[in-house]
Image (tube, rainbow, N blue to C red; front, side, top):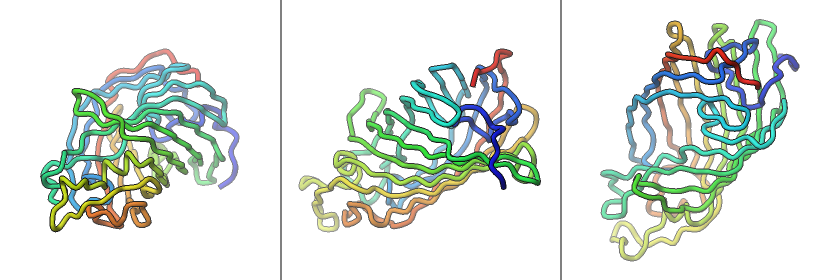
Length: 280
């Protein structure tokens, strides 16, 4: 591989989508997406949750406000060909405690969302003699986390997540994309409490009371493959491994496994796209 200066666009551009690197991206696109994912009930849980969804698929690529793609929903404050600073919003950790044995009798865990600033720095672009291009980014996120039952929101503290991401377009086939990410997570006590604290009222003979503390939560290595199925339809495969050993609360009775994993499969059908192009 060699350094390639030809990829002159936003550092947050998705290299695994419909358009090639030499094509301008539509200002907006819409359609339907669906998929299935299996993951731990919560970080370090030995029990698992299976979710299957079909949802509208919408991407908007405005100069400031953007929705969809790899960046979720965000407002961009600063951007050049190497740096992006934004305020972003998205889903957070998998959290589901329905029928969870180790948490029996405890309050259920709700869905989690997070919002806060994000800094993305493009470390380097590469091109390959056999075809294809790739990008290595560093990403820093500092976000507030909230749980919701869709009737209200409760604050669950803050997380700090440094991440290295690698994307490559032109894996096996010219329009196939590959992504790899390594993320580490630190959190304030309130989020650790949400996952790992056992107050005296919920203590049992097999689940002693435990006072959770702030600190390191864990690391995750994830990989994804995106590929064309037919015109305007792309398929996705994703997997990740969570490394929970060394967590600040690995002695909690609710902390069960040092290593967990997630797997998923999905598709996107792009039914409409704008003639107007994004400026980045």
